[in-house]
Length: 554
Ligand code: ADP
Image 1: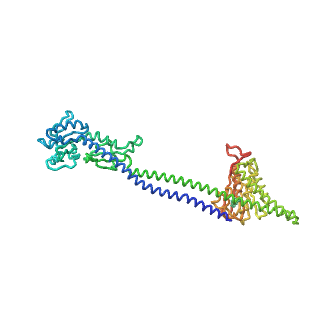
Image 2: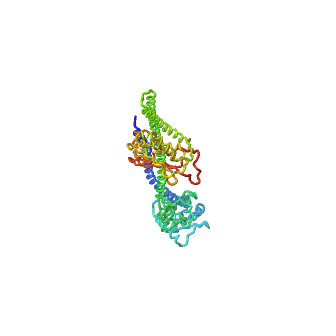
Image 3: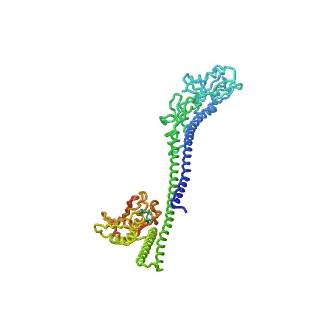
């Protein structure tokens, strides 16, 4: 069979293995989580940036789509119109297809006397007419000039498409070169873009449509879009942009190639946003891990306590059975000797009789302790407190103990209280039992020393009963634990001296039932002093502790 220490060590090792089995995967999980979060931080920053890029892309595409569809719709004129005598009929087409927001529409034919001269559509009269000289007209002439050169040259234009002329940014135009069947440029249909209309109406509408809906609650999360013209002037969209640089930019494209788009997160940059997510997730993971680890440790501590308790209980059973068997064997042997009449001298008869008496008292003491603890554990232990004389109780207990002490070669010093004590509220039997337990321990743990002192003194409102020995003493870290039930100090004499681990638990319970306490001063190798402090008078306002008092578990 294994010694209790070995069993305890195995139990401890098992618990540590369980702790490691639970905590190592948890820590691994936390490390993995950390690594995932680091890469998630990187990915989410990129994803956030991509989202901002997508907003810009959506705005640029919507502007292009808007102007291309106007161009396709209003500038697609049949080549047959581009003869000097039919050009004025283009006005019908413009009246039908040129929407209000198209800007100023014009046509240019490259044949006849007026070749290269732009005619502008007047919405009020639905007719074409030349314009007086102006910046606008100059810009249109500049846009027409290259096409006029092209029209004069033989050759074909493979795929005519909408062209933008933005050399004069205030009067930018979209022109559609019209080609005949042979691919020769016969004229131009064009549109002078109304920049003011674009900035006031078109752009804000497109920006509002491109950004997703944000509810009032998370409007702060809506990104902030800015549009600047070629000169760096902010043309949209009403809100002042933060001082920090934009997180994403791009050119607006057709037909505002010199314009630029920029976007900010309103309060946080993509990096801030990812960092915050990272910190939040990591914090949550750490919190969860701490909770799980706390739970595991708590469960393991409870398991360890249970194991220790069950170990103590089994030690208790083995100690108690030894404690019961030894006096019983002596009683039987001496009883048999006396019955068989083998003892002749009357001194021997008296000696054996005393031994039987002492052993039966030890048995009674042990059984009293066991029964008391059972009552304490089940909450049935009650104390009868009545005014009593502490000195008398101490004297009687010492009288009962003296033969055993003398027999074992002890010198018992009794120091009575110098001043007479007032009567105390005492359960005399319980105090006698507690003092008996202290004396019993003093004898058991005295080692080679053969002196025990017992005394009573007064300390203010307290009466103190103390028992002093010069035995093995108790290490400091064990001192608070010796009052726990079943606890026995694993060093010192514990292997040689049998015990149940109940005595001091009962002493503490008795002291507390009297509204007192037990104090211990001890040094390994020098001995111990146990003092039972009992109140002389009940505290003000408290009922006098007389009569039956039921107490809970020790
Ligand atoms: P036990 O039956 O084991 O003596 P107790 O509850 O009376 O049980 O004491 C608990 C433990 O406290 C003992 O096992 C012993 O290790 C220690 N102890 C108690 N009294 C003394 C003492 N006077 N000197 C040294 N150790 C003591």
